[in-house]
Length: 339
Ligand code: UDP
Ligand code: MG
Image (cartoon, rainbow, N blue to C red; front, side):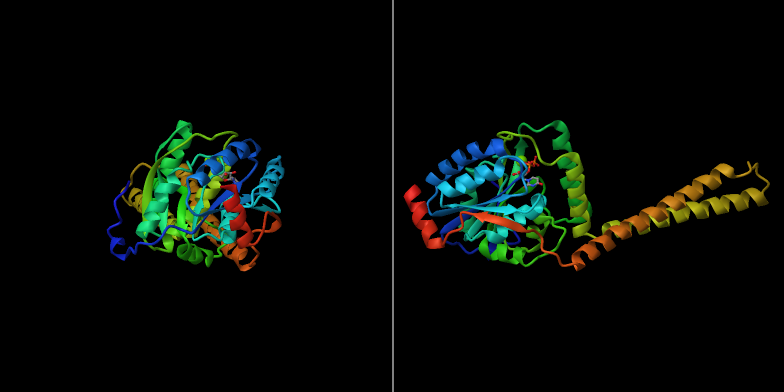
């Protein structure tokens, strides 16, 4: 386990275990995962003193996921299902779940059991020491391809060095968040969401708990390359204006090449060097300049598009139906009965 963060250790104020713990799980086309998940959650709940709440967000699944979740909610009063009207993507589904969770501490995790539930006990210990965010740091990633491991490794390094230095490396969205910190994150209603960056941004004492990431219990990843690239782009552009500056740097570089070419042409002319009628160099220069201009405009456009989308002020997600919503008193009675 990592040592206390020296910057925040003096702020720690020990506290009681969370009276109610919420688990938030975004679920998208995971019908094969629901049965093992139910078993794992029941095992976990038996070892957990205090009340447990489950917020399962069905992110517009097209398979039997919703039916299975609704059945689970009907038979287990700790379960609450939010059914989103379509697929909004993992970050938004997670946001919906975090908004609806009512626990004193909330844990966000994958439905596919890649994030082992037993790690949550260690997270709670850290919470009791006074940490507001306890994130799972992957020591190993079993059952994932070398390609996936490499892209994830590169992603965290690039994000940290170029975009957001406070982002902890090898940390996904698996984390425990205290109520106070969650309320702060809930205030941030930006359309383009990079949750782990947002949680880092709000501050509060944060600490890592090392764990071994498990292979998926069933099904296949819902993050194909296309979604991963889109996610990285949102992460980079929602947390930094560096890409805008990059286009300036690129412009400057191309400008310098232009100046160098100009000086060379002048020298060649005045010193009588051999010159080929400069078709090639001209084409190279024109394409360089054209590409730098277009890329700069493109990057600018990305930010303008984000402003435009944000300015529409649309809701982040639409909850079409909920299942298993009952009063807190009813829920705790039912939870007590189930134990
Ligand atoms: N997920 C989601 N909406 C999406 C994609 C994924 O709710 O559009 C859920 C998915 O069901 C899983 C979690 O987000 O519970 C993480 O996805 P996945 O396990 O496929 O990603 P990986 O662990 O492979 O990066
Ligand atoms: Mg997963």
